[in-house]
Length: 139
Image 1 (cartoon, one colour):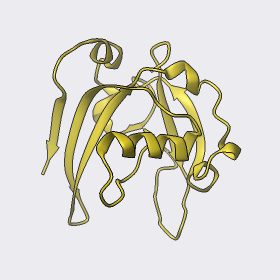
Image 2: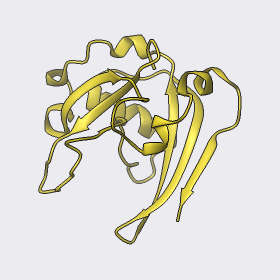
Image 3: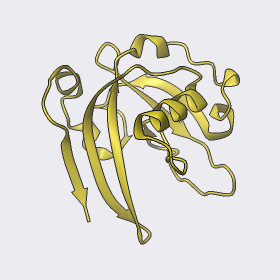
């Protein structure tokens, strides 16, 4: 977060995957590699996609869902160094130019954003609180 806005990306179609996200923004992220720790994976994915290492804060949300017969579990952390992401240069990343069409801070209340629960949450208050993570399960 920075000034009430959320760092988000619009993904490209890549590697033959028809990811239809042209009208939606989502958070940077990805999957863990075999044997990789959760925080290490978050840091790696953020560096790969933005070139900037996050300072990881609290775990804010957990989302569980099924898509095309596959179960997913997503973790949403607060990156406390949001100001470091004000100028992301995708040409200085390992994966950014391949995977990302656009990166920006967006207003989660008015921007089409996935997952949709982020559009209705009070993200600034949640990030500032010490409350346990909110869990969303869509099974």
